[in-house]
Amino acid sequence: MAAAVAPPLCTWLVAACLSAACGDGEKEKQRRHRGGGVGGLFGSRCRLGSGRRGGARSGMAMSVALHPERTVVENKKPDMKQRRVVVTGMGVVTPLGHDPDEFYNNLLRGISGISEIEAFDCSHYPTRIAGEIKSFSTDGWVAPKLAKRMDKFMQYLITAGKKALENAGITEEVMNELEKSRCGVLIGSAMGGMKVFSDAIEALRVSYKKMNPFCVPFATTNMGSAILAMDLGWMGPNYSISTACATSNFCILNAANHIRRGEADLMLCGGSDAPIIPIGLGGFVACRALSQRNSDPAKASRPWDVDRDGFVMGEGAGVLVLEELEHAKQRGAEIYAEFLGGSFTCDAYHMTEPHPEGKGVILCIENALADSGVTKEDINYINAHATSTQMGDLKEFEALNRCFGQNPQIRVNSTKSMTGHLLGAAGGIEAVAAIQAIRTGWVHPNVNLDNPEKNVDVSMLVGPQKERCDVKVALSNSFGFGGHNSSILFAPFK
Image (tube, rainbow, N blue to C red):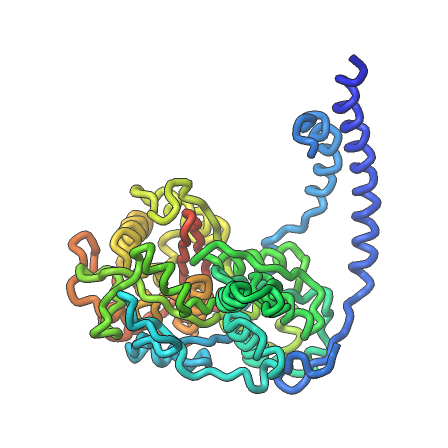
């Protein structure tokens, strides 16, 4: 009998001890946090690697024991709305250019970055086109020795991240003044180091001795953020999120929340992916998700058009510098836009198909508006997820129509009509597009929308040419396999 009673009793005692210890641990953590950051060298263009350095059964007892401590912690949380978050830097690596202005000017001109795949022989695949990056160099951004070993997703990530810092005016002098313990990196990836891992499998067919010793760390999605933080000496929040094609938005909103909660002052955030390799192309072909319009690549990605036949893969990275407003002002940073807020939801319906009633998307948008403190009438520009798939395009548009159909000022477009779908990086470059729309007063066209679906209200959609738009609040949607929904909002800084 004693033995039967002992486990829950012991668990309760352990929980009580943990509760007391957590209080001491929190004080110690706060003491260390006030101690300041650790500096790091920041060379020319931030060159990387340049010689620098089981109690489920007793859940009730544990819940009771820990509850008082949880209440105390919650009472200490700062008011998130008191800390405003602004965008002070942007970095991109895309099929349409590796500079935010070049990238957006090409979008405004309606130029397609989709072409025949040249990286490998795909003549036996039913899909032979992609938003492939034809010209890219890590020179000046990543040390040659590391670049040679890294997967491309990591090269894109680090390059875009450092370009974002340069775009934000974070020079060596500014870097030396930053409190490194309050600077973080949160750049995710949907697919991670697919090429590195694929090469390791091929090497293993010969012998494990032939495998690259870096194949495991360079394949994981977190390592890009980790290596970038090591190079910068940034000791704040550092991790990656992988929620398929919603990855970038998840990273951006979580990064902003670290700032809003007072845990960081400056965050690099976004996404990166490099899936245009045999296993990546083959996998999506097997899913029957890709367009097969090989004879006319520039016309293949056609969101909301009757003749769309699947999405077109793309590759690259999109990274933002998010910064606490007063911190940005103190260093005299140029502010491109204000980040207002966002939301995540789950369809809880199907692995790849959207919810037929759009419940998860509608809930996500409504929660994002509430988090941002704006109304449906305040939104006048939407950068849609719209990937050029049969079900996805229609269900998102139905949700948008239900939320914003009564707003005659709304303008909706899809960046993917020109870039293809960059998977985990899509939300990153689309956030840049939304911010550039705010800055320039122009929204880019929807290309290839020759025969719109009958259920699509074309009056909401941007036409085949760029349009003037004085953006009040911009909404950017990203959705991913697994039913992951995300919406984030930006506005002009006032």
